[in-house]
Each structure stands twice: as C-alpha cells, then as structure tokens.
Amino acid sequence: MADTLASGLFISEILADNAGSTAIDTDGDGGKTKGDEFIEFQNASASTASLEGLQVWSQKNGLLYTFGPGAALAPGETATLVGEYTGPPPPGFYSAGIANNGNFLPDGENSKFDTLYLYDPGNNTYIALSYGAPPRDATPPAGFPSGATQSGSGESINSDAPNGRAFSRNSDGNFVESDPTPGTSDVVCLVAGTQIAVPGGTVAVEDLQPGQKVCVKDGPAQVLRAVGRTHLSAQILARLPMLAPVTLPVGAVGNDRALALSPNHRVAVSGPELDLLFGGGEFLVPAKCLAPAISPQGPQGVQYLHLLFDDHHLVLANGLWVESLYLGDVGASWVQGQRNLGTLREENAAHTDRITHRATARPCLRAFEMAALAGPARALAPLAA
Image (cartoon, rainbow, N blue to C red; front, top):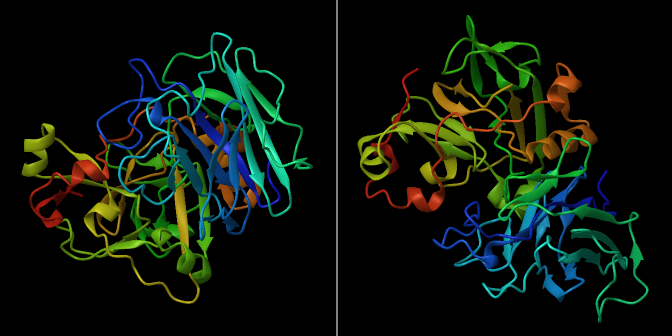
C-alpha cells in the first residue's frame, strides 16, 4: 500500500519521461514536451486535506514546488503538479514553472533515477518515492528540512519503461506501468435523485444495487458491478466550489429534463458543427462545457454516486445519455480508495479488481476543443433514447 501523510495524501501517479510517439500534451498547448511531465497526489482520507504550505522536493533538483494559500483536496480528489502549465491551470492542476529544459523530472531508465518527496512542514514529516532503473536509495537533497520524520518506509519503482509511459497504482496500491492519466481521480458522478433507466422503468441512482441490470445505449442491459458514493459537505463546497455539480437546464443540449452532474461528467452529444470540426459522429463532452454555471447546494451538501460496469457504457439519466464510471489503468486506485473510505458497494470484489476499461464508449472532447465551437451548446443534440 501507498506511503501516506497523516492528512491522507499519497503519490498516486508519475510521468517522468514524456517523450517519443506516446508522449502526451498535459496542458493542451499543442506541444508534447518535458514540461508536460507530472506528479499526481491523491487524498485517501474521508475529510478535506489541506495542501497549503506542503512542499514537493526532488533528490536531483531540490525544491520543485510549494502549494499556496487555500489549496486543498476533497476526499478522493487529486492534485497534479505539471512541469509547466501553459495558461491558467484548471482546478486540480498546478504549475511548477519548469519548461522544456529537462530539469523537472529526470528520466527513469538507462541508469537515470530520482526520488520525489512530499513534505508537510506542519508536522515535519514526509513521504518518499524513488524511481529508476534500478532505483537508488533515497537521499534528501541539500536544503531539505533537517530532522524531518519519514512516514512509511519509502517506496521504489523500477521505471525502465518506454518513453511516454506513466506509473500509477493498481488495486493493491502498488505502482504499475500505465497510460498517463493526469487528474482522472475527479471521477464522474451522478447526483442523488437522478433517475436511471432500467428494464421496465427507472430507479433513483442512489437506490441502484450491484448485480442489478441497467439499460445502456449499446446492446442489452448490463449488470452493475459496483456503486461508489462521495458526500461533499456544504463546507467543502464553499472552499472548493469547482467540485459542485452543474445543472443542464431544459434545452441546454436539446434535452427536455434538467440534469445535475459533477463538472467533469461527460454527456453524449452530436450535431452538425461537431461533424464539421471533428469529422462527424457522437462525442462525450464534460457537463461543465455545456452549462458552466455552478448549481447552488443546500446545507446538506451534495451526494455523488458512481456506477461501474465491466465496460464503459452510456446510461440513460433523466432522459440523457451520459457515461458510466470509466476505469483506465489508474482507475483501480479509485476503487481501492473507495474501499478504504467504506463507500463502495460491490457485487463481487474479486471481479471488480479485474475491471479495466481500455476505451471510452464514445470519443471524448476536452474543454479547449469545445471552445472551438462557434455556436452555443444548445446547437448540439442529445442522442436519441
């Protein structure tokens, strides 16, 4: 299992060698460079974890970053530190201001190595992750706080992997080679009260049970394997308003019923402008791109629900086709985190551990791609039920 600070923070993913044909463009600026390398941290606790004042260090390069005032993570959420993020980073992303000069994260193959540290000055403790081929013993760099106590025994990865490959947690909490997925722990969520289509009718999402069949867009009804839940209090939402749901009002995308979703939950849409820009077909678009206004929440906060199937599917929610929970290589860490919090209901835990989704049900458009649309979102159309 992961070494963890007392606040519940741990290192969930790293991309230390962003190069070659599989390199990614983390910040969407059109380039795939060393500045797109990242370190991702996750909150495994049941309460909000403050990042304020926490420091990220490197054995090779010293102090990389200090989190500023107000930075915090809700339960299960991630903070992704990128070498350099072009433009203002979106919620959950932070820029170390280290551009494409090769000095953010040393590569981890061919006898290259580094150790990453997350240091909490509040209680003078840290966690450490060493990587390389082979990894070396952790050696704090010059200037690292003296007398600091290590939390856990330290972790290491033999990171002799192809360029452009990341390392993320599997269901046992161990690091495995994976496709880079920065920021994906902001898992997609349906708000309690949403009506989900099942054979013979609809059921409120919070009343669905693992093992129950749910209607999907492609093919016969599918068995629901697990249901997760996340409750965000009014206090958390006041501090982290970007986590509040957005509401797609009637007519937002041709829909005849309002629907509240987490900001990054993707909705299936089509339309002539999408045909023109992206070659036609059906696409998944984040809810925040369709209705950017945040939905006010009452004193009880919001209850989010997550639906997991063997594959990534489109489910019918309040009459709109939206995605189910997508588990890429990094998804198993979400499952383990939900188990740790006691918020996961499963049909069969061993079966859940074997689920990995290699492709989304439809191609996904990101926020900057949606910004290319000349007309309003209402020019898009939902998929037929």
